[in-house]
Length: 203
Image (cartoon, rainbow, N blue to C red; front, top):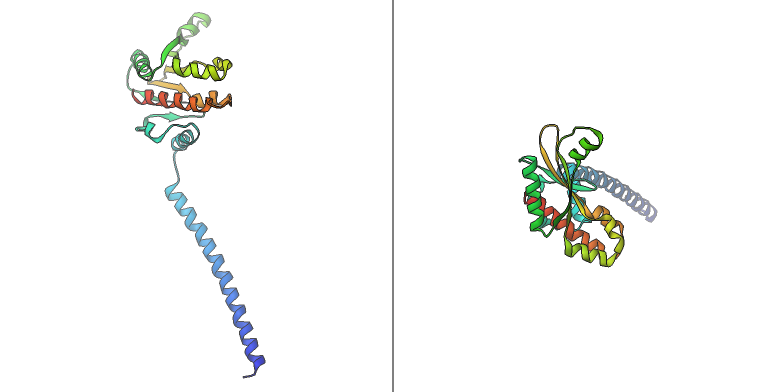
């Protein structure tokens, strides 16, 4: 066999090898996407509550330990809370006690249902807003930003729905206090949120 024939055969062989490598790479890539999609479908489909809770843990600074019973608490972009198996008045008393255990006193108590009845003659289900404040944390926040009182205290809602179920809900301090954008405020909001979550869990 001449040198020219050998060179031609080598060229063809190299060409075929390159084509096979390209085809293999494409197939692996396609299969990889398929596997990745399957894995995603199997392992990473989460409920809305899971996504919200993960967002809160990542951006709100609450540690995983604070979520010892996360299925009870529902999270939104501006608050969190849960339904409780007790009467409205018992829920008000229970959340007041739980907040007190975390260092919060109730500065204000607004009976929305009574106010609507008095001012508008409108009847509505029990609905109360409690203004919770931790003096030490509030003092630290005011020292950093005197105008932060515009965002205080932390509102806690106790309400009854049409099915007579009672809900306890807290504002998310990270959603509002984080707007200040000053050093130290973010850490404070995370501590406040952690305490509020523990209080709700304890009920």
